[in-house]
Structure formats: structure tokens, C-alpha cells
Image 1 (tube, rainbow, N blue to C red):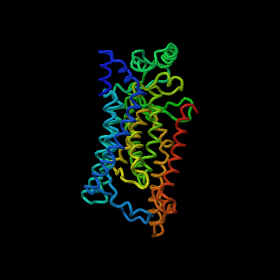
Image 2: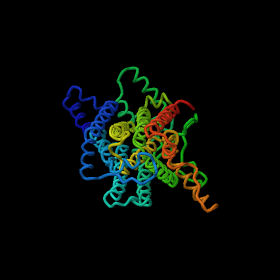
Image 3: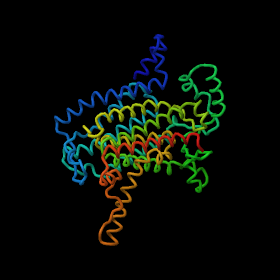
Length: 424
């Protein structure tokens, strides 16, 4: 909203300084500051409100040290995370941008699913919450919508690695410096990116020199105009990624500050990827896929970083508030959709390695337990407890130590992800 106001002030009235809102970097910084302000200032008020209403966490007896002390800690803190994402985005982002529209839709939809789950747990006193099949249905619906928009929406285009139509540069270059050097770099980039693939199902393969892969090639065997049917393979892949990452973040949210901290690191990396992918000069220099208008996602992701980092103010050990499924389901799905929009979803096993390992530990534990119970009549376990962070708790590691070590691993994985831009 403020973008349009200050654009009008700049173009129509010539107000000094109003033109700064044309810069993505400025609006991204403003989004971070605003989301931090919302979470830190209003987070305290939310905690007080939840305590008055006695909206607290019901803790299962898991035999973990310090677990019962968390009984009654306010939950549904994901509400403040969602507010700290949505409000700065509405204020500073271009609301006519298709990528921003998709992310707002994703945030609100997953927030509603998570809220229903928390509502059933807290107010209906049902520890199981929303049935798993309904969560999956909600994630599948989102995957269909997001996949369909990416495939069929004409505003969503990608470069083929060679060059771009002149008409597509106007918005991008208007946000860059107008110096002679920048204009020269712009001309070089313009020569490289001249063609677009509309309804593109291309993505990026890490560590490969010619690193663009088209999902349509998976059905090339049907012959004829196989690309017209690419949505049949593309949309299921989008559904799988959203479901997997969303549930992975949900499983990671088991000890104070873990899911929030890891998400903040992951989102910071995605913000960098969004900025360079939407900037024609940097895309040319790094020889990566150029995605017109995707740079606007930097504002949304910056708000996401501020929201998760600000929530850590109250969520670090010992937590004063839990995000609940309102937050954990949302942040995982948001990360997945951003990666898909940036055509960097194949980097998620690296970037979201902590989420993936947590999910795999649960799959291994459950599968092995069922197998041994069927074979020996008694279920056996590989881990002391799953997800993995509880395994280390059972081994006697303190929560802060587990969280810090997982965060260090997440930072290392983030660095490796950024390195893939040039290391091929």
C-alpha cells in the first residue's frame, strides 16, 4: 500500500525522497524492521492475553527432562508470526505482483489449517487436534492451486538462459542504479536473456553446469505435444514438496526455538536467492535462471525473516510462548512455495536438511517398529525417540545445546546452498 502512495508522491508531486520506495532493498529492510516490531512489541501483549484466557499447551508425558514444566505455556503464537508476515507485506510489497499474491494466499490458507488444529486441541480439549487426513487434504488443495497458477498464469515466466524481451526490462532496470556502468551491464544481460518459456516447468539442478531441468521431459515418451500435458507431472510434484516441507517443519517444532531458528536461517537464504533471481544483472553474472518480477518476493521473505527472528525473542529456552500448528504448518509450507516459485525446490534437501532429517527419523522409527513387531511380535526402535531432537534429549543433552547445534548445521547447509550458485 505504501509503495503505491510513495510512487504517486514521487511521480505526481515530486516529493523529495519518495522515490526510495522504488528500491526493493529499501522496502525489504522496512519489512524486516516492521515485522520485528510487531512480534516483539505485540508478542508480549499476545502472551499476556493468552495467559488471561488460559490458552496453554497440553503436554504429553514423554519422559523427557523439563517436559512437564512446559504445561500451560501459551500456545497459538503462530498468530503473531502470521500477522508479522502479512502486515509488512501489505504495506511495502507490490500487491499486483503474482508472486506476492500466491504467498499471501499460501500464508492465510495454511494459517487457517494450523489454527483449526490448535483450536481443536485447546478449546475442544482433543490432544489429537485436526485429523491428519484433513491436514493433508488442505495441503493438497494448496499444491493444486499453486501448481496450477505457476503453470497456467501468463505473468509467471522464466528465461531460457539466453536472453529476454526488451519490454520485460522496464520494471527491473527502474529499480537499479542509472549509472553508465550499470547500463552497460544491463545491455550485456539483455543480450543473454532474449526468450521466455511461458508456463515453464523448468527448475534448477544444483552442482550441474547446464543446470536447468524441465519436468515436462519426464513425460516426453508420450510423444507429440507432450509439453501441453506437463501439468500432469508438475502439479503432483508441487503437492509433494509442499506437503513434505510443511510436515517437516511441523515435526521439527518440538523444543524451544528450534523450528523458528532454523526457519529464519532458511528464509534468509531464500531472500538472497529471490533477489539475485529477479535481478537481470546478477542473474547474468551468476549464469542462473532469470525470473522476471520474482525479486518482489524479497519483501515478503524479509517480513518472514523478521517474524521468525522476532518470535525467537519469546520462544527461546525457556519458551514463554509456543507457535503451535498455526505457525509450524505455515512456515514449512511458506518455505516450500517460495522455493518452488524461485525454481530452487531441488535445493530444499540441502537448505532444509534439518527438516528433512527430522522427518526421515520419524519414518525410519515407525517403519522399523512396525516391521519388527510383525516379525518378532515386539516392536523395536532405532532411535531412543523420534523426531531426532527428542533422541538427543533422551541421551541427556540440554535443549539449548541441541537447538544451537542444529542451528549451526542449518547455517552450514545455507552456505552450501548459496555456493551452488557458482559451484557446478
